[in-house]
Length: 116
View: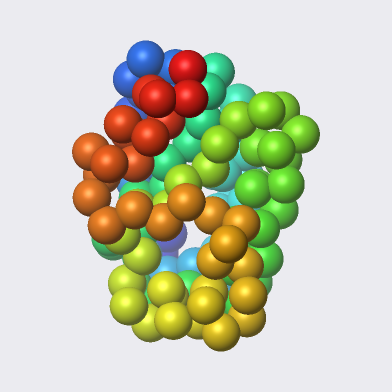
């Protein structure tokens, strides 16, 4: 499945809604989308992963790099509702402590607002 990302802006926060597969074939676009989402925001980026059907190691690497970029710009990066397989993979390889992972989109947005 092709990758498609849409952006929603609210109070300095960007919500990136991701649909499709994030793998070696689409990771460059995904990385570009994450960079764009961070650039559009003043406070942070919430990556809505409910529509991400598949994420491989290259997609996780892109998320880690986006998190590093967010840190450099004093912004936050939160993941909203990654599928159980992705959440388990993140726990297995270790970067879960680098992300705020929220089961509810409103929680992710509220956390971002609390930081303002």
